[in-house]
Amino acid sequence: MSRKKPRRRNNLGYYIKEGVSSIFTHGFMSFASVVIIIACLVIMGSFLLVALNVNDLVEDAEARNQVVAFIDDSLTEEEARGLEFQILATNNVYDATFVTRDEAFQAFVATHEEAELDNLDEEVFRHRFVIDLDNIAYMQVTLDRLLMIPGVDAVRADVAIADFFVSFRNVIVVVFIAIVGVLMLISVFIISNTIKLATFDRREEIAIMRMVGARNWFIRWPFIFQGFILGLTGAVVAFGIQWGMYGVLVDQIVRLSGGNMIQPVSFYEVANMMISIFMGTGFVVGTLGSAIAIRNYLKV
Image (cartoon, rainbow, N blue to C red; front, side, top):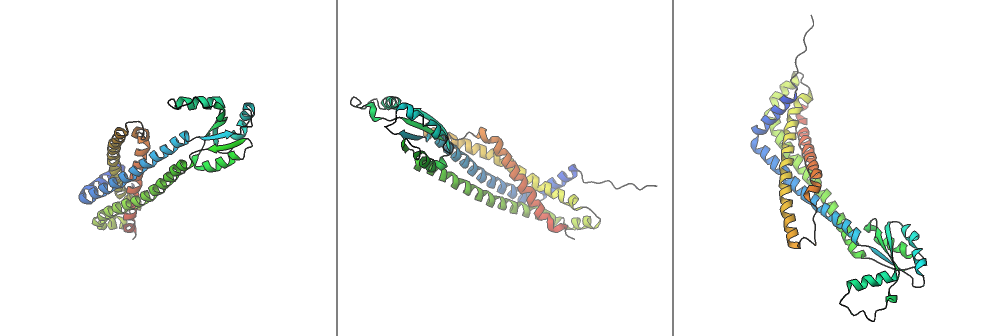
C-alpha cells in the first residue's frame, strides 16, 4: 500500500498571509520602512525629473543652436550651392539649408524694421549655409571640420551655450546615479532591519521548520513577500506624492514665466516610465532587503 505524500502548504495565500501578518506585528518598523522608501523614491524621482528636463533643454538647444557657415565672397551663387554636398558629408551635420545673399538681406530687414536701412547694401551680406547638428556636444569639432572645406570663409555658433548645456546635463546624470545608489542602499538597510525583527521573533519556529526538513524557499517566501509588500506600498505612495509635487511645481514655473520662456516636461509624458521605475525599485529594494535579512537564519 503506497503512502500518501504530505500536502505542501507552500501556496501563495499562505505566503501573503504570513507576510502581511508580520507587517502588522511590527507595525512601527514597517511604517518606518515605508516612509524611508517613500522619501528615497521621491528624492530619486525628483532628480530624475530634473535630468529629463535638462535633457529636454539640451535637445531644444540642439534644435535652436544652429551653425552658420559663411561662403567666400569670391564664389558665385552656383559655386556656393555646390558646397552643400561637402557640408552634408561632414560628421555630425544633420541638415544644411542654403541662404542666398538676398534672402539674408531680406531676413535682416524683417527683424530690424525700425533701424536706418537706406544706406545698407545687400552686397555686404554673404551666401551662407544654416546647419543643424546631430549632437551639440561635438560642436567645436564640427566647426573646425567645416572651416577645412574650401570656400567656407567663416563659421558662427554659440559654442559656449552649447558647452554649458552639455556639461550641466552630464553633471546632473552623474549626481543622479550617485544619489540613486546611496538611496537604494539606505532603503535596503531599513527593509533588512525590519525583516530581521520578524525573523528574530520567529527564530525558534524557523529552527524547528529547518529540523523537520522544510525547504529554505518555503521558509524564505513569507519574509520576501513582507519586503515585497513594503517596497511596492512605498513605491505607489511615492508615485502619487511625486505626481502632486511636480504638478504644483510646473504650475508655478509656467505661471512665473508667463508660459513662454520655460516649458517643463509634462508628467503625463513620463508617467509610465516613472511608475515602472518606482515599482521596479520598490520590488528590488524590498526583496533584496528580505533576502539579506533571512539569510543567516537559514544556516543550520
